[in-house]
Structure formats: C-alpha cells, structure tokens
Amino acid sequence: MKKRQELYAGKAKSVHTTDDPDRLVLTFRDDTSAFDGERVESLARKGMVNNRFNAFIMGKLEEAGIPTHFDALLSDTECLVKKLDMIPVECVVRNIAAGSLVKRLGVEEGQALTPPTFELFLKNDALHDPMINESLAETFDWATPQQLAEMKALTFKVNQVLKALFAEGDLLLVDYKLEFGVFKGNIVLGDEFSPDGCRLWDAATREKLDKDRFRQGLGGVIEAYEEVGRRIGVCIS
Ligand code: ADP
Ligand code: TMP
Ligand code: ASP
Image 1 (cartoon, rainbow, N blue to C red):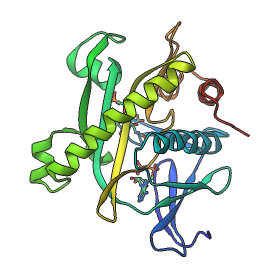
Image 2 (cartoon, protein in one colour):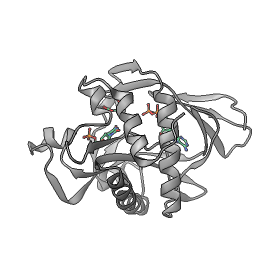
Image 3 (cartoon, rainbow, N blue to C red):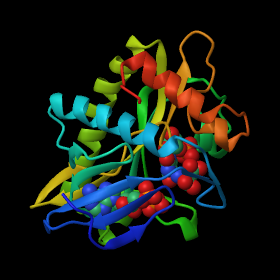
C-alpha cells in the first residue's frame, strides 16, 4: 500500500492517506515529546522500537477480542491502519498511583489502586489535555454516552490482557492512555500502545522503564523501551 498525501504530522507520528480511502499509513518518528509538546527531542531508534512494540501489542489485543485499527506492519517505522474518525477523548486506567494523579490528589507514588481508576482527558495540547467527565463529553458532542460506555469497557478489558502480559516479563503496568475512533459505525482502538503512552515498572525494583525516563531526564530511554520489548517477546530489529 503506497503512502499518498500527508494528512497530519503529530508530535510523534505522521499520518498519510493511501490508495484505499479506508486505510492510512502511520509513520512512527524518532521525535519524543513531553509536557504536551513543550519539550521535543529526537531519540535514535524510537520510531522503529515503538512501531514494532505497538504492532506486537495490537496483535495481542486483537487475539483477545479487542477491535483495533491495526492491519499490518509495512516497514521498520510504518504500519497500515484503518482510517478512524477519532474521538478526542483519552481514556486512562491506573493500577498504581503515579504522574498527574499524585500531583492532583497528593497521594503517594506507588500506592496500589484498588479497584483501578478510570479517567477521561480532552485531547487538546493547547489546553494541556484537561481532565473531563462523561457529562462534559456528551454536552460538547465529543462522544455519546454509548461510545463512552464502550470505550470504558474496552479500556478495562485491555487492562486484564496487558497486566497479565507484562507480568510475564516481571513488569508492572502502572497506567496507560488509549484513544478510540469510529470505523463503519463501530468503536475501535486507535493510535498506539507503546512505552510513550503508559508507565511500566520493573516488578522487583520498581525501576521506571517508560517515557517517565524522558520526562524526568533519567536517560537510557530507548534502552528501557527495548528492555521491556525483550522481556515480553517483541521482535525488535
Ligand atoms: P499527537 O496528535 O498527540 O501529536 P501523534 O504524533 O501520535 O499524536 O499523531 C498521530 C495522530 O493520528 C493522533 O492525532 C491520533 O489521534 C491520530 N490517529 C491515530 N490512529 C488513527 C487512525 N486509525 N485513524 C485516524 N487518525 C488516527
Ligand atoms: P498522567 O499521569 O500524566 O495523567 O498520565 C497517565 C498515563 O497516560 C501515563 O502513562 C501517560 C499517559 N498519557 C499520555 O500518554 N498522553 C496524554 O496526553 C495523557 C493525558 C496521558
Ligand atoms: N503525550 C504528551 C506529549 O507528548 C504528554 C506527555 O507525554 O508528557 O506531550
């Protein structure tokens, strides 16, 4: 499938049309952003690592019955996906307190969250992805109540599948963000699942092996992503 016109260049991926009006090519770049694009750096190999990582995870989710946009890997940094009408709402599940939850509520980082929490954020960098709720999403037509219910159920189903998968690699799935869209009337998981959009800690030492290494200037960012990939069986180059 040939790339045609660039539709959109995001902070980490570029989106191209193809000959098929229902399919897009996503190109994973090495660009790495934090704080809603306020800090951007290029990290060698990141595009390739995240593209392969995402393909592996999307395959596992499909096997578990979760509808995803993923069709095929096209190259080291490109994949073919279904073209979704994206819903501008980010779904976040947390198993362990970290990140913005710790800042917002003053709870201790590392506290187990039972049951896991579910939050919605508006995808809007200029507004720093503000937290929203079902009522706001419905009123402003970002998503219908039925779409929100499906997104929530699928986001928790992803938790079951991925907590178990990462546990096999002695990793804790601390939290993650998912984006959904609509394809031919159905809710489908879109965007990516990679260490850019989740938190993963070593189960024994609680060492951070995700994008917090970049946000917090800890170094070894891509080495950590590769370590996670190696532990769960992702084939990286
Ligand atoms: P951002 O927009 O946050 O900077 P990226 O750099 O990852 O993010 O850009 C990818 C863009 O493509 C995002 O806006 C995402 O919502 C969108 N997207 C992801 N998957 C699909 C899809 N299957 N169909 C249409 N758009 C998609
Ligand atoms: P937070 O602690 O900053 O709210 O983030 C929770 C999780 O969701 C964390 O793994 C990072 C991810 N996330 C993104 O990747 N992009 C976003 O825009 C948001 C709000 C969260
Ligand atoms: N995903 C957002 C960004 O790329 C937020 C973050 O990762 O800190 O800027």
